[in-house]
Image (tube, rainbow, N blue to C red):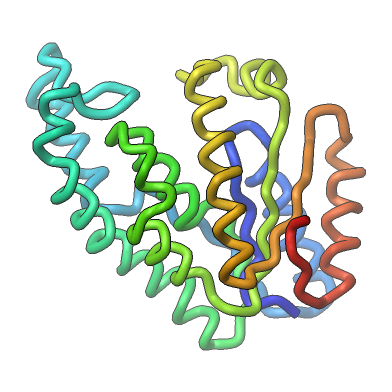
Length: 221
């Protein structure tokens, strides 16, 4: 069985839902499963952002899209370093150690999602294809299976109507994930594409289980 089963993609595409379903299914098979996620909320940088927001409620130092343009230019490089340093403890305790203990890790957010979010936050599309991206990809263990979850923009907006999502944000994320997938093929990582636009949760789950039943590496075509 795969060491890590990782669901990634834009918000509103079913990552958490299907990660939960797969975790339940594997536990019912008697397998040792650890259900987790690693995202910006688990980093020191996120706490720093919260502090900045409280100190500057009207200054617009940060917003949903990240820092303002002037500050972004100044802190882009140190912020990348801060993200790596603060993300590593979460990766160590939530992924690496549990994997070494023999658990199958089911994760609905991890380093690729952090990479895409950070590239948007820092207004740095080149982050997707640089050395930082390569480093993040190396943190995905060999013997992992990745599911790229996607859906039409209108469907995502409807599913997440109470959140601050925009068409521009969704389209940016979608293109960024597509660019990342091209690179993952070079590292021999298994990637399956799942579209949840019109497919029911039950049918998507069955598709995912069909991939798991193969129990072997396959590459995105």
